[in-house]
Image (cartoon, rainbow, N blue to C red):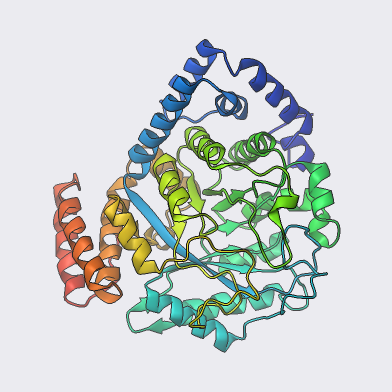
Length: 471
């Protein structure tokens, strides 16, 4: 029985409802009148239901698909402007008790060296990330109650926030760890985390249980209901995601949007972010054994349809994807990207990129400076802003500001000030030159004269050595 307000996983992610949705989408994929109605609804920035979005995803009329892409690009620009938020993952430990068949950290893998960072090693990794210019991290860890208990995660968060090196500081720590208890989510909230991120991997329960044959992650309901416990524990912002390639993409797409609808129905606020990783090669994992892989065109269509469906939700693309794919998806809906990522435990302090403890192959291996310059050359503003979290603009408070457009008054100037910090402290001469020209042109786009004047004053102060201004 499908019920988005239910707290039971199999009721708010209903297998029968997804099958009915896919059947409806298939029958209506050529229904131009219905497709036009759905596209018109998307233009109102009120979002789409999982059924409506599934019709657009199934649509095979080229002219309509081009309308979908154009609208996704317009919505992205209207809500996020040309800002792209920057972050990096930090892998704390690859000890894991689960048996996930698509992840090299699975418990039976005897070829991967197991490693867990000490607090001194965490400190060294953070300094290396600060020296690149990063201000926002997503910490990652395998699930292992002995090696990686919640106390270890909390200690690492405390260490990360405590490190001030030269002009460097990590101002926001997002957390991507296994599903846990309400009590532990409260502890994470008290530790000052940003977004709690947990990928569902697949919403297909039968496939989920096959893909997670052993370990606590085998429990589909406990995993799928984690976001409700996180919100009960006081975490305002949560991030969803599936690993595309494990199951049929249309099924996952519908399930993902149903999960977003559920969070909105129960908690009054949908997901803060949605991530769209595709399965990639890793230590003992061959992605070709999973026969549900998606090509780049299908991937682009998924991103565009998500942007139409949840217009105010941030979308994340990682360095799993190539420069070319990332460039294409930035226009269609992606608003956050990682830069200079290393997916191995302790990878940032090694001069050469280590591969023996990587969770997956990194396709985009450019430096952060190169990624920042690339973004600016495409007309984007790389943003290292973390102001909303530090000003309490989270959860429904953030969404209400986003929906009435007021968040732009903060985000645009904050992006320019944090970019100025990066240029002064970390950028190469070429990148600095391009960035300063971009800032000069973008300050004129700040509509409020008072805000613009304060921005100009703060940019001068940053040039003079002061740091950490925010609206």
